[in-house]
Length: 317
Ligand code: R5P
Image (cartoon, rainbow, N blue to C red; front, side, top):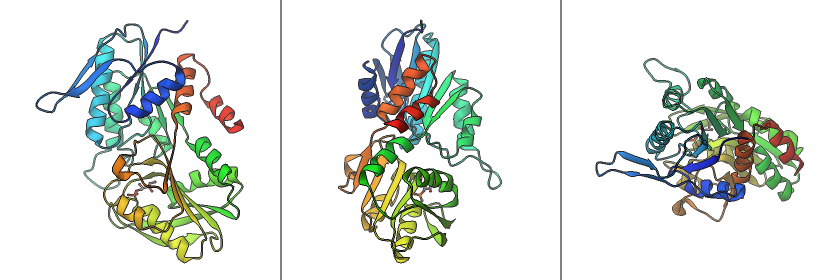
């Protein structure tokens, strides 16, 4: 008999935590996650977790540093309160793009975050569409890596777009785009992107055919929206018909909303791994929920059942 399951949430995506709990049929655990007068993060777990199988839901999205620190301190509190097992459910894993030393004297921030979580005693990690799958190796403990693919593909199948080409806005997203193209029975094209600064990109060329096609540009995340809107502009200029954008994680920082508002697109499809604030909501943005998928994964982890089989079940839906 597994020990009692408890689910807690930080402040970064409380709405998703509530949707997950609703799916599972439990309530979000009682915890104070606030601030002291000097802005230090204050955590107090208000219920008994001794011997419990505890899940902490927290996307490390903006404000990223607060989100990371809340997660670290919640895990520390739960460990010291004798939880038997602690799983960090991190639907969006921030700092993931800083995953290597690509120049001198820079940190590997993703590894530093993984080290912090490990050092306070996390036992497992559950996340969705990591920027690079290899990030799993930054943890020396089990990482369940889910894909928003089944949720997105179900939506696109319903749209039933003819003459569809899935386009990767850069080479890094080509594997993701290939998976979508295969499942949606669509063509595939890849944009050769160069990053000019951390907020601006330039399209060098497009490999594949987009003329006269409906285009679905797919990426793991949209941050400043430079990559995806540049790619959208290019495929339009090359004669694409309707252009749809999709990304699992709607970070939407900096100039993102300005760029997206100006982009000639039919729709932007994202998931709720990061909450879409009111000022970022737009009629052209469709948010799909990953709550059911995460809820199922949590149940399977709790009952020591296969998580990968969840995907077979979801593909059959
Ligand atoms: C890059 O490798 C990622 O997959 C995204 O394409 C990129 O990080 C998005 O950033 P932005 O929206 O700022 O161009």
